[in-house]
Image (cartoon, rainbow, N blue to C red; front, side, top):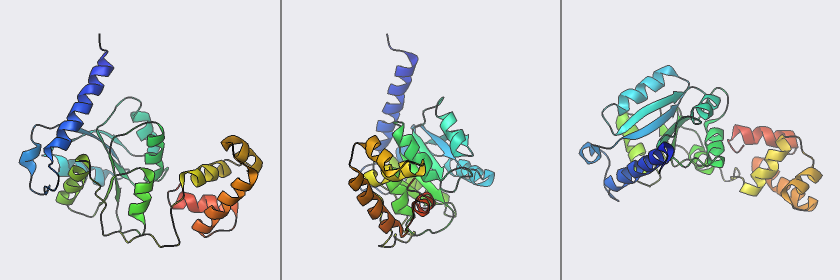
Amino acid sequence: MESSAQTSGRSRSARRESARASVRPGMSTLGADRDHKGLDVSLLLVEDDAMVRSWVRLSLRASEFRVTAEASSAIEALELLDAVEPDFLLVDYHLPDHRGTELIRELRRRGVTAPAVMMTANHERGFNETARDAGAQGSVLKTGSPIELLEALRTVLAGRPAFDPRHPRRDPGRAALSPREREVLSLVAEGATNQEIAKELGIGVETVKTLLGRTFSKLGVQRRAQAVAAAHERGFL
């Protein structure tokens, strides 16, 4: 006999597949509300500004997206996700306790696979690359229109990326960190020495030094503390 959790999980998967199938490849999502009627996509909204949360709810009111849970911080979102399993994530970049990218990265580490769209209020250089590196599938401007918000959500739900092109691309000298470089820097942030990092990751000390050197170069810094601060600022940690 299936448990209620198994049945609920199957229902959520079925809803996602139905939603993706309803948006045909190449079809414009603008003005296509009739293709989404009958769908029920639960959404977790993570945003600390009450006015923005109200704008999102109103923007999605007549759509297939249903805001079923709201959090005003990354910690609150993690606590909520112990009890709910939304079909979709809409996350602000500048949360009061952590960057939204840090939250998305932590959710991916925990096995949360629901598609995610990042929100920000301003045009930010490198924002799309930072969001993509963290595991998001799209980005939207909070100063945009409800139609733009819906278009981004529907595009991502259909399995395609939807990053707002109004964000300038990342400068060539600010390349993303590789997963291994990020692992090393995470341990540096915890206060680990090169020897401790080598032991933890099963690599040589010289390899650790090489990885740190590459990381420092990408971040444009010279010291460990500067690297950690820069990585947090850019959403790499």
